Amino acid sequence: MVILVLASSLAGCGGRTHSQEEGCYALVPVRPDGIIRDECQLLADAAANLGARLSANVLLPIGGQACQLQLVDIHLDATTASLDPTRFNGQIRIITSTPRPETCVCQAWFEYQASLSNSQSICP
Image (cartoon, rainbow, N blue to C red):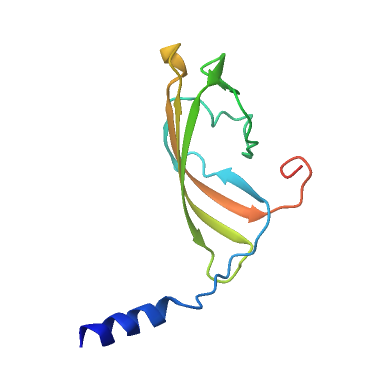
């Protein structure tokens, strides 16, 4: 009986399809009520859309200073829009880490909306 239940559970996992389209997405913070925490001041008015480029020795402006970060932890929760596979929304948590100065260690949590983009400024 246990094997039958396990086999039927595993069969339900196979062949799952995802409706989200692949590609580059522009992430726009939900302002002001979607900003939960912004110690880093990453969501200043100048940063309307967020983008990311992964490289060594990340330099990020935090609290008016340039911080060289050793670790950036990003957690992204996302839900695909029910009728539009080119959009999703959710919540992002960003935590920075570096040995000094301590003012470069911060967190930002916020809700966002994302849409498929082919803009050269967001998706080079």
